[in-house]
Length: 399
Image (cartoon, rainbow, N blue to C red; front, side):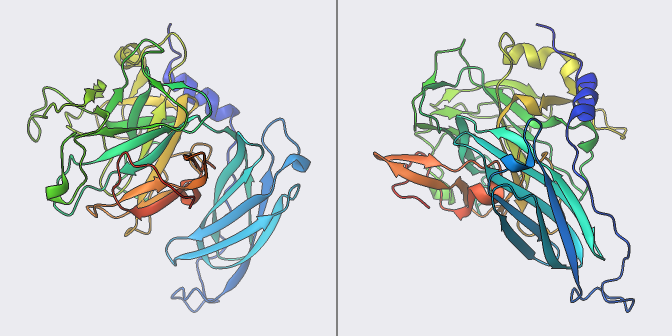
């Protein structure tokens, strides 16, 4: 099956998709012209929510709206009742990222985000997207490595959060290219995401690798025991990201766990990880009839970074193919680029590089010994940060 040219797809989806409105700045002073930006002035920030396509304002569920100023470490949150679509915050001046999340049904949530520069009374509009909860989710992600700088001691877990058998066959796991500045150079090609370094896929023709309801798997970069280096024991991992023929920095080791298929490794890396402090993880399912190998071999599915002279190719994954996406930010860096659209992740989970800690999805309930995990499509709400490394362990209580 021939895939649509990705550049054409990006323009088509961008033109037809919902774009969020950005509040504009009318002043660059924070203290009535005296300079310095003390943050003591208060302004009204009015946020209006627009219902997703096919819904009316009266259909909106109870929504949680949060405005965050990372520079000043300020967070404002308001709860809207069902059917309400506007809220006004009294905030200090500065740049704000505003997110809105609400649960429409057991399987559908509404979510969205906007930016606003508040140096006078401002307004911002969030165009909400309808998000269907995925049956397969990232349960935990350990991307930071340990204080021993082990590098390849990282891992992630995938859980079947549904009540039906799901199949791992053909699922793609990848990470998004992190930005080195506060601006994401790939924003212009949204809703396409550039793969950073390595993309891997589960083998199988469709029903060879079932995952039962509530079950999870551990995927290690190196499936060995890292406890002597302040990491976790990954010798019992279910799968491994083994990357053959890698000479930078040294040859990868093939441990006992089953191997994922490496479909992309343009940077000759030996791990699947966006970076030890920031990045994003993607779990994707291709349309029926397209194998991961065929997708990765199609030159139409590649791009180089826009508006640069770089020649490095990046495998591109459309937002519409995603089952789950988790954005990760450096807890020590106030200004960072947003890598994912709000419809894929309206928030982010904070980590500290080389901390030996992971992020873990919150448990909403335990029924008959099985944990159910929170999925509001907002990693700020859905994940616990600075968690101990517990690969393969099942929680016994709700968070």
